[in-house]
Image (cartoon, rainbow, N blue to C red; front, side, top):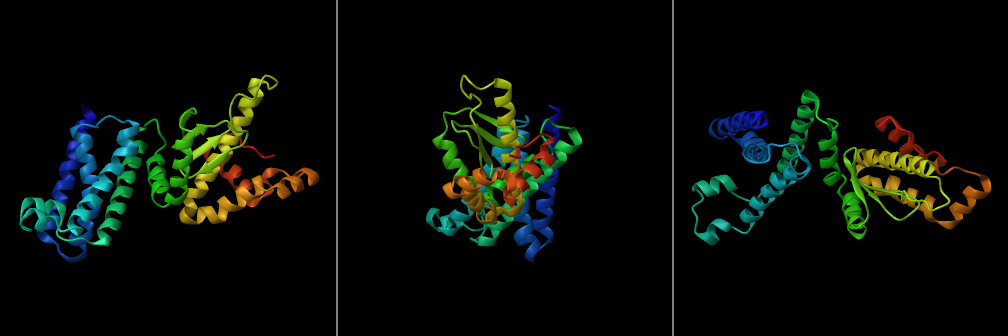
Amino acid sequence: MKDRIKYIIIFNVLILIECAIGMWTDGFVRGYVGDVLIIPTLYILARAAYYNKDTIFSVYVLPFCCYYLGWVAEILQLIDIYDILGISTDSIIAVILGGSFDIFDGLAYLFGLYLIGVLLAVESFIEKKDREWWYPIGVFLHWTWGNMQTMAGLVLYLIYYKCPHRYYKGVLQTVWPKDSGLSMGFFIFTPSEDGGEDTHFSERMEYCNKVTVHEYGHTIQALLLGPLYPFVIGIPSLSWGSIPVFEIIRRKKNIPYTWLFCEKWASSWGEKVTKEKAIWN
């Protein structure tokens, strides 16, 4: 009940701000600041009305539902829904949906999505939630700023959908039937924890945990680099790990896998963020 009251209060504050913008401002503030705030306003309304509990859906999925609702409104404006349905542009529905299509409104909705992340971060920091305060912001960045690699990761996740999955420090981890790891934005793929009859369980788990920390380091790189990640990290990493000539060079000269700049960087950042050991050989 306490959470519901909190969201009701925040919702009313946001509504008052939106009304003030509509009544007493014009230009940039009325055109775009109001659009930025409408996305968190919808989100807080949904949390107050129904999704007040702190769940994976309410924290990581519901914000995107509100974000795409804004785009639905823009598309309806683009096809001139008012004229099709015979609705006056002065009607309450037209006021809610907006007047006309504007591509910059979509950018305002994106800032609104990030504002939800900031609100959730502040909530986590103040109320000491189970998640780290920055996890929601990280997730939103993966699905927007880092959309290219995250969408590729989603495809791979669906291919290996029947494999075990778990949430690991704000990203989705898949334990796949391979002896190597892979990171693609919001998704990381780590080795099978069953190394066969000849492998000691504790040694195998130690290896898998170190690979997980290393791949998590790549996700931090993805947050920083966004659309540049496939070119700065992804292509060099895949080439270094899978092209036979590099494998031969590493074996003959006894060069560790993390000798390459992007792999050393991933292990270093993975250890700093998780406070756990990463793979270095």
